[in-house]
Length: 138
Image 1 (cartoon, rainbow, N blue to C red):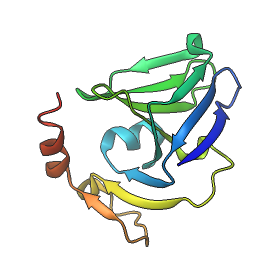
Image 2: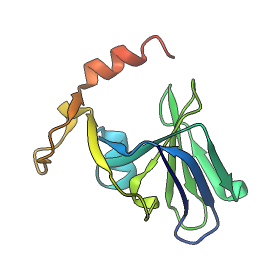
Image 3: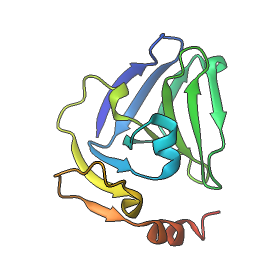
Image 4: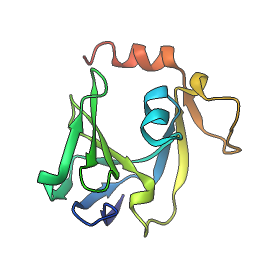
């Protein structure tokens, strides 16, 4: 696990993540692609995350199992947080000093548009598999 600090573009929100998993994920769902204009590249940060500047964080309940947070000043995407566990997934690009990263999983692989693909060999989960996984967690 890796430790790192980050901030949004304007510096209003500062993040300290103590347990970043270097195996990052990519989500191809329509929500993630709409949110960021591209797939969501995320590192799993667990629950040991410290956020400073919480008065500048807006939370959007994006599904029955998670919410998304962003800076109200500059719009930087800060996190995707699971309601049940409190675990954070954060954009990999927030953390400029992470080394040894490896793409490990692609979520909603059946929703990946035909205009891009990755050469990385990863595990994948389809919409049906993800909905079945979260069915008992909502």
